[in-house]
Amino acid sequence: MSREGMVHALKQIHRVLQPRGVLGDLRPDRYPDPGQPHPHLPSVRWASGGREIPAGVLEKAPENLRRHRTATLELQRAIGEGLFVLESTEAFPFRYHFRTEEIFETFLRTGWKQTTLGAPARRRLHGLRRAHPAGQIVVIEPFRLNVLKKQGGG
Amino acid sequence: MNGVRRDPEHMETRRLLGRIAFAGARVLEVGGGDGRLTRRIAGAAREVVSVDPNADAIARAERLLPAHLRRTVRFEVASGHRLHFADASFDIAVLSWSL
Image (cartoon, rainbow over the protein chains, first blue to last red):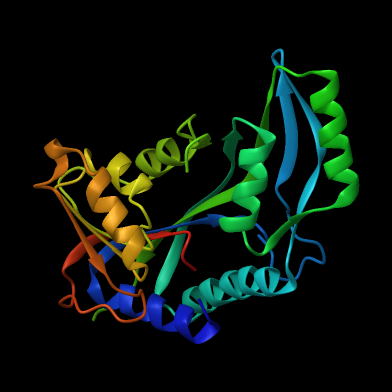
């Protein structure tokens, strides 16, 4: 969603909510602080025998990172303008489980188009699969739930 | 997609249902996609309207909706910045990965 789209969406949601209605904002926790220099990226792990061994992180395209930083900024702006008040915020891990490396690669190509697995992480993942064949890939996405309450009329 | 499980631990749902009182509420979900989260929250709410601009995702969401939730849930192809619903018509809105 573009910055303008985010602004419109927040205003539209404010309009359709009852007075004191509640907004739950769920999304990847890329930039909990829009001023932070480095994003929180999803980690890739090989899960085998009850252990999860880190292989690296998924890289996100600059456009994706800009959008996430803008989303945090626009939510803060909506709060600053008095549309909503932040009631609570909580970070948590959102986990994806991929049964095979091939399924993971297909998902990267078709589902996560702004996402890449760098060569060092890919090599490490191959190595882990060779060393521990009975396993699967787990991706842990840093996630956040913001709970906001509508302020004002309308 | 077969072979992919998203949040099988229900971390997301547990937090959402733990922080927001869905009981008896009319809920608007923006960016509901294929209805994964919709199906998880529908049991707790009075009514859920889930919108997404992707018509294919909405068609899949409708296919995957269990029969016992069909009276509670409605899916629509719509974008979050063009909502046609009446003013003050929802108790709760959920922005589902859509900002």
